[in-house]
Structures are given as structure tokens and as C-alpha cells.
Length: 160
Image (cartoon, rainbow, N blue to C red; front, side, top):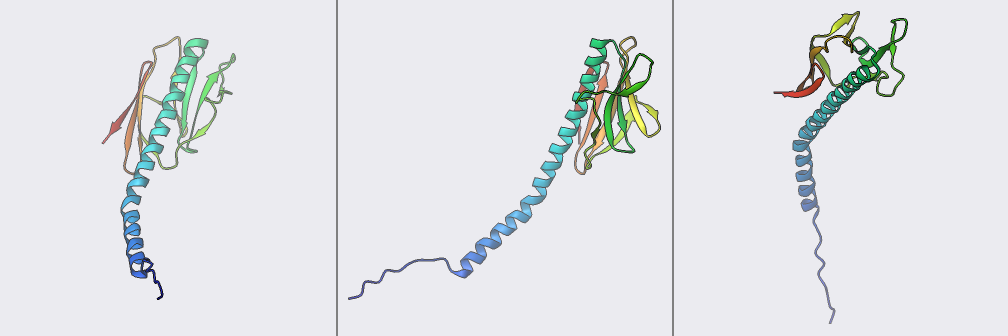
């Protein structure tokens, strides 16, 4: 007598159905994943702005020198400048002061309290004068955040 064992395997139809379910789940979840990624990028950009501004305030206070936070909206860069003994501003040679690009997915808008020079907005931190009050908003595709600078306090607010 021949002993036959039956081996159970998936049919082609069952495999196609499972693949269709997985593809549908990916199509449904993908937009949410990309939206979440944009939110992270926007948060990182705001944190980088805030850290650079905090450094500018600390540097001006500690060294007694004027520091400018510059946003070059024409080239999409931001950086810090400090004044030399001749009263000329130049980019700070520190890693936090160097030129850094804006996130390409972000639009900067509602810039208040900044001075303008050409296509650049700047905020001057002068240790011998009153600290500035300013704000600006970064707009992503689905997210909006505002960074507020009030004297020496920097805060980030989510806008819905």
C-alpha cells in the first residue's frame, strides 16, 4: 500500500488576493507617512532656527558684541554674522553660525520685527540696546509653525 501524504500549499489565487490586500494597505497608508515626514522636517527646521537664535543671544551677551541673525530669502540660506572692530559684519566662523539652507519644502512668511537689506531679513542682537521682539512663520504643505522671539525668549507655536 502506498502511503500518500497530502501537502497543503497556497494556491495562486490566494497569493494574488494577499498581494492585493497588501498593495491596498500601502496605498492607503503612504500619504499619511509622507505627511508625517513633512511635519518632522518642519519641526527640525524650526528647531534649527531656534537653536541658532539662542546661540546668537548667548554670544552677544557673553562677548558683548553685536550679532545678526540673517535669513537670505533669495538664496534660501540663514546664518549668523558678528561685527568686527571696524564695525563690519561678517559670517561667524563657528559651525552654528555658518550658512545653512532652508528646508526646500518650507516657505517662510509673515516676517515681523526684522530689518530688511536687499533680499535678506536680519535681526540684530545688540547687548547695549533692548533685545528685539520678532516672529516669522514657516509654512509646509499641511503644517504651519510660528517662531516668536520676545526679548531673550524663543518659542515655537503650532498653527492649525
